[in-house]
Image (cartoon, rainbow, N blue to C red; front, side):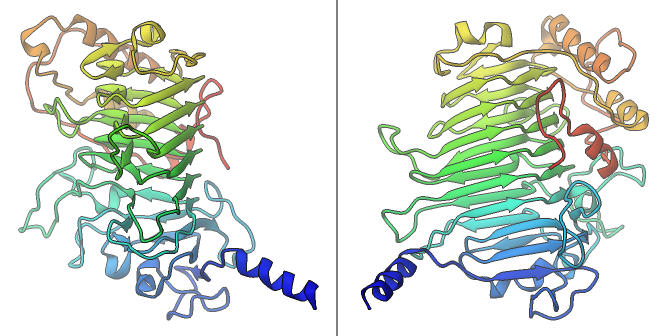
Length: 431
């Protein structure tokens, strides 16, 4: 009797989270959401999801409920993609890719992130772990391009053609805020995802935690986006910076982070941006080919950098408050960087994208408004370094106008899968 009583106590002490849901674009119908009777799209079952539910998504291209291109979830859940259609195997960056996109011309189009786990108003006691794993989020279908070549995004709508604006919010956004559980902390993991062709003002991947949050961002590829590749945010700002969200970034590849537009100067073009009320540990990541900074730490968060590849960033590798610092000087000149930071390198490497995409990328006009009235030799040198890494001829002279024939030219999923890495032993690899 005592043994049975103890067993019951043990079972009651183990958190019991929600159910498993299954989604298949090929077999799905209705809202039963089982392996035998999967739903057709995540958006079709969002209203049924409960805290702790896990959604498993099979291979295929998903455009959202009514092709609206956005799934907004108001409770903490996990989303796992990359399954075979019968859910018997996983290969998220290979045979069973789960691609989330949208349709810019859809009458149901919305501008919210492709995946938005929005917990800003969540006040329940349950705080199950949140995991997003194995998704390819491609905003190309959501964007408004100037023509069928997809060489240049258009920010505004065109009522004559039925084109909606290019969304300026992130592709994957997780915002975890305060709950009614004062002793609970959020555990958040984002892994094995590819995020591409998004055109936000801030993070293509944005994760914001609350007090004591532990956040792991591992083995992701953030490719060809405007704004910020990864933004690390905080919904908790104590006076003494205690118990702030703690981020760990491992083996991520962040390439080709564009400014919001050719003349934007102050808020975009960063591979990584870090909120001041956070701590961050970065190991074995690639942060390269950003229009401004590899790491924007203007808000002076405590960061540990160990064994990262940081290169090809046009303005500087690292920004701390308003001081631009090259990688060679970062351990000497950075004031808030953890003193244990070491092993970071700046090394050229080739990115195996298609020649057509590389040529279009090289045709863009990157305007430095400050440099238009100053010496721009240093920036020219960095731009030519980047062209060399892409296997393109160097260019002479400068560009002093705001027009660009190319802006955020569309990167194909095939090119993205080739570009993820690893590069020189750093960054993401096929899971």
